[in-house]
Image (cartoon, rainbow, N blue to C red):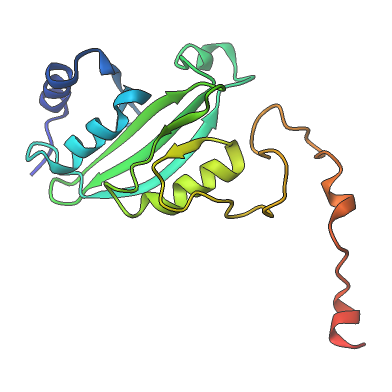
Length: 179
């Protein structure tokens, strides 16, 4: 069984109105753009509704729209895009959902209550981009040290860092092995 995306998008537009910003197809993958205020309701619908049945969230990531080429910037309504990859196993379909988040406040509702698999992806986006996922059960750094200042995947973060490497303790393998 194959998912009829045009019918699904019409249903979403009818149900959620102006919360659906746009739909498109890119390299044979369907893309749905949603207002961040409605992300929780739209994602719950996509999981629960019989016409969608996206049982699995396979990825959560973020894109910083700062300094993108002009032709790519037209898609961005805010600085950041939180990107969700959904899979419907029963309907053999994939859907990319994008929600745009401003720099201040840089926050969006967590979908970890809809899919448990969102937990680590949201923590990673928080750690590396600074997006706060409201309602997340354990939002804390996952890759960077707890006392690390800044978010290294933001486009305005200096390429060589802010001197962090100078403050990291030096590790000497030979010394640690007792050579």
